[in-house]
Length: 210
View (cartoon, rainbow, N blue to C red):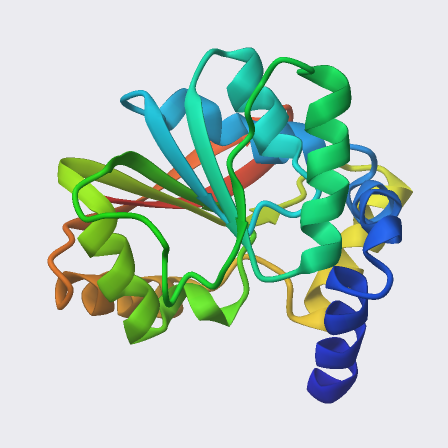
């Protein structure tokens, strides 16, 4: 199952990136965009860097709210989709999208107020990623990671989604995994905690590291 999921996500993020929004809508019951944008209430400062911007859901929200945003993604296909979306919605905006990995962020030290990643893969806990995130954040900066969602609805479709998330291992990590992640971040100079916020009935689990 893990190998099949790796293949599926690789295709989804690259060759089949054009299907990403549809797949996200299906596996969230149409709530994906609202889940992603729910982290905006936690953002501080003006200069925001998004790791793994996908098709640009959060970027569009941040720009609409007046933030100065940067975004990186490893997928060339995803960045093309984001560029088209932002150019259509914000024609005068000089968007700053870069193809790069979180393990090597092409920005100077102490240049970002808030880093944010929504539903990231395993790269987010790599030592290289955490080292780079600490480097680019200003003193007192914030690192927000939307780890997962617990669907709490009572409907049949909500029950199907919970089963799907459990089978594929995409559900919110249990408390022991969260505690291990928090302890691991302290090694890289972060003070981290978990926070739960809600979108309607759904529980979103977030790590906030400062």
